[in-house]
Image 1 (tube, chains in turn purple, green):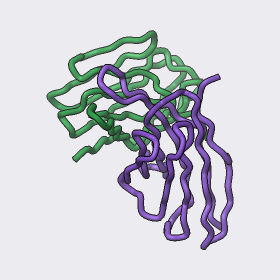
Image 2 (tube, one colour):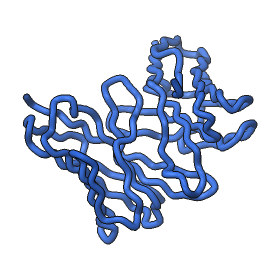
Image 3 (cartoon, helix red, strand yellow):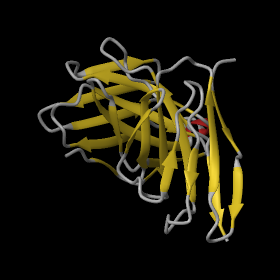
Image 4 (spheres, rainbow over the protein chains, first blue to last red):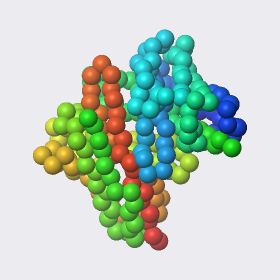
Amino acid sequence: DGGITQSPKYLFRKEGQNVTLSCEQNLNHDAMYWYRQDPGQGLRLIYYSQIVNDFQKGDIAEGYSVSREKKESFPLTVTSAQKNPTAFYLCASSTPGFGNTGELFFGEGSRLTVL
Amino acid sequence: GEDVEQSLFLSVREGDSSVINCTYTDSSSTYLYWYKQEPGAGLQLLTYIFSNMDMKQDQRLTVLLNKKDKHLSLRIADTQTGDSAIYFCAESIRGGYQKVTFGTGTKLQVIP
């Protein structure tokens, strides 16, 4: 089945540690995105990538890093510089470009808790 | 800049209609979307409307778009307990990069 797989689903981390969240898609989509979800704040864009080996900062990139070495994969690292990392993280992909509806396909999310 | 606003909570009785409202600020939006999020899961697209349309109907769902007031609504007819979820309004501006801005989400509670 085609889709987006995020792992792990739950992750606990001690303060001062970096953690990496995995996102893999087999939809052959060019664009991939990372969002952060906090209660009552909707989804906020962290990073996005339109093509392999290229990515751009979103609205809240500070304290996060990404890479896009393969079309299928877009891992997110939450660094110790992120001051409030406890949140629900969502990865998405799409096929941008004129003529497409722009639908985003989401993974099931990863819940990070900092102890 | 873009800003999308929704009320945070809506409670309806099973069998009634639900109406979820959204206001947006960017008049250059090309597509407007409604996404549904079940507890602890990702978002799934429910429906979308192109900015040159006023209304779209899809089974129990009716989307109304008022471009003058920058107001979008989602009506769910005959609401069921399985409709309990968070509903996000989103707008998209098409171009080389498609930026999607999401609202805060409306939590719909359906009372049996």
